[in-house]
Length: 241
Image (cartoon, rainbow, N blue to C red):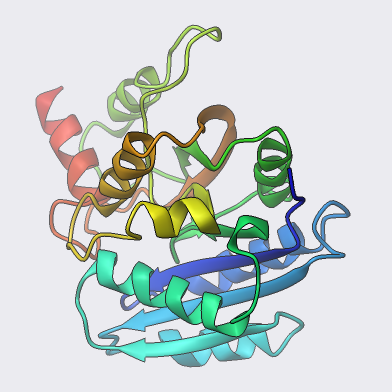
């Protein structure tokens, strides 16, 4: 098995000027982890139909020690934005062996821990071609019955430790480059593109790991950037309670 030689982190963003700085600061720490720091590393921020200062904030963050690219597009589609980010990352290494390229994906409103990439690379070294983690929420402020919602949300991750978790989140998903391409890449859809890619990778027979210890923290805001996305899921969960 060939070791991973390069890592790209892809971040789609729609009007995330207020939060993307936090995301990129956490990525700077994750990319500096000893298990990652010696690799060829790249960050690609895809500013998708932004009317705020998302791209400017991201450029300032990259200038503080992150090698990367800002792509400004007009898709209004998470799937297309993620796919564009991966395409730009792979174009950075046109002659690279895709089996030695790791594609880590998160969101602009998400904070990743220092060992986020290190854990994914450890799984890759064990032969896994894709890794799906879980999420926690920074705050439920703004939601009705927020204490109850917090309990209900966390109950969705109460799974016996000897079983894989059933969750797939685009903000916490890593894929080896050859598996990504074999599965057809991110589907060009506005919603549930994460499940689409994950299911395609599994259908092609690649080894996949659902890692309950691979955790990120994402925004618990009640009004999100994509209709039917995570914010709407939280609102619906709170309403059902």
